[in-house]
Image (cartoon, rainbow, N blue to C red; front, side, top):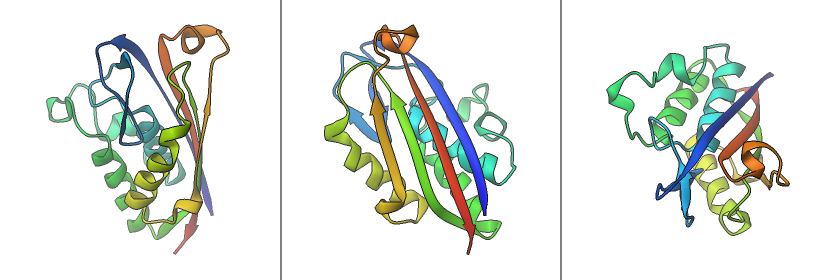
Length: 157
């Protein structure tokens, strides 16, 4: 068994799309990043890379590389999942927490779970996504950022 932890934070700005777990969530503010700024997908990607001890998302997909400008973050997750499988592992489970002041994410979580499960080649029952607010504290609570924490447990195939 291998365990990995990942985290990501992105600044929010007016007029940008808010993409989380491959779902475009209706919102006046969206995340800013070199790629599509999907913080959930980035955190899960980092968790997988951590579990297989193969660097982080930046070492594989540098934000200085124009190839990744505006990229769909599922490209990164697919690559990490392929590396994981190549090392003889599969997902036992994913647990993640999205911290975002607004909008409410409950209506979108099942679709996010299905998107991640599909790319990771696992059952949706193995993917947990929780949503929290920042309770008015720090950049998240003030509506200026989205933060995601993720943990993955891998098991040998």
